Image 1 (cartoon, chains in turn blue, cyan):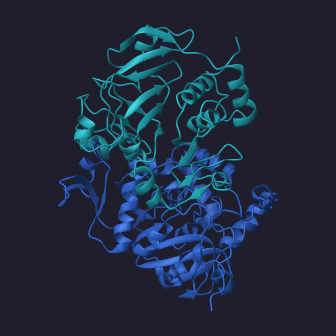
Image 2: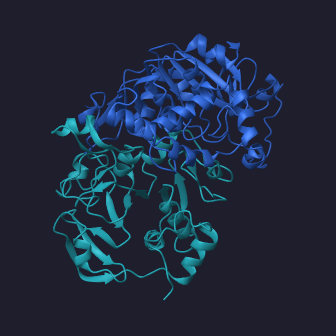
Image 3: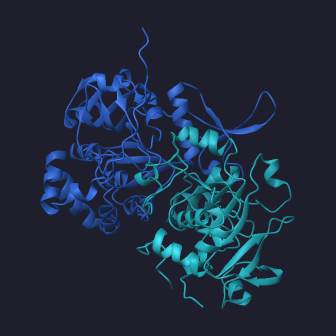
Length: 306
Length: 266
């Protein structure tokens, strides 16, 4: 495990053709990592994520991906993912292969991957058409009671990228808020990059071990990148920038405008710090507008034993 | 009579259907407002469960999405998605769930995956769709496990079709009695479809959708014109009771004061 810049973490761990999962269920979406991957010109990635969201819309518009594995395509609370739709419906900027599950199917694939199982059983897909278009969804009979359940195979991405509130220098990572499948994807992936709002002393982590979701053991690179999830959010640190989610709906409808946006906000900035400086130059109230106020949890007593 | 929008009619009709319910799986938009309205009116003990892994949510603002951080602060429990799908949903703890639909057929089977396509045949439709829709999300398994499913969608000929292009979430299948149970689907399937023009329910013996009530000013003929199959109509067709003054006050002053979801009347 080493503490790295985002540039170096991506350069070392994300390669052309990799299967990459940037997870975080409608929260903690690491746009900083996606933008760095676009800047470094990665190609032929297999992008895995339950909810592709704006982050994969942007990466697909930038031509990084050949295939996407997912369970819900949408701009959450706003509408469609227009770049994904252009790729699927018209092959622009390049054709995109899709492999599609329900949410439970994706969760189950990650669990099988994390636990090194050959498949995971779930009661889903009965009466539905997904198994007709995805050979990875099968049905098996239980050897015990003859019950028939669906099964899906393990998913073991080459790289997982997870955004979180804080970690200690060894990569022990704490998350509060929506936990999504962050733990499962970290255990399932061959390499893990964790990006945090803060790096804290080990004693902070040890004061509340129940809040640790990912042990440093799994983490290959730890990156300190405040506001790395903008325009998504980090619980307790900043809110979702909904203005941008609405704005993207307009920008992304047009291929030329989308490319112009990528030129200005991804290729045109050096790193996340420059992106934030540029953003605050245009919107000086940004931090104030997205500040969530304070709702502190009550401390608990773990006790001293011995 | 107080003026109201079609969206407000859909919200109040959905909220009333939650009378006496305890655990509801909520989506954003109209279902979210409907569930919060029900909590203020007919179902004070209603627990809102969000697909993002939040139980007992008390959102301080209208959530912008299913993953809005306002759902977390002040909730009774937040869990990862394995817990949510395995224990809450598959474990049978969800009483009612709301689903949306791009297409629905007479048996309440729902498509939210693809519309049409360039080449003929089922797989061609999927691989080269005319319109690529969001896909399942959790809807496929919600439709299987929730004890009851309520659908909220606008009434239109494009939505109410004889044949859906893709079955994302199964309803009453082909209507054969016991069909769901035979496939191992624990929930009772779709029970109610709330639209901007009328409300539909499903016959117990045939699983077929029928017109249960029309909103004030709408006729059964007008509804039939929007539906792609010969629609069965309830004996003694009723008129939907419009929103009360108090329901409208709660929606407009407390639940959606900016009219984000409710103000766009047609």
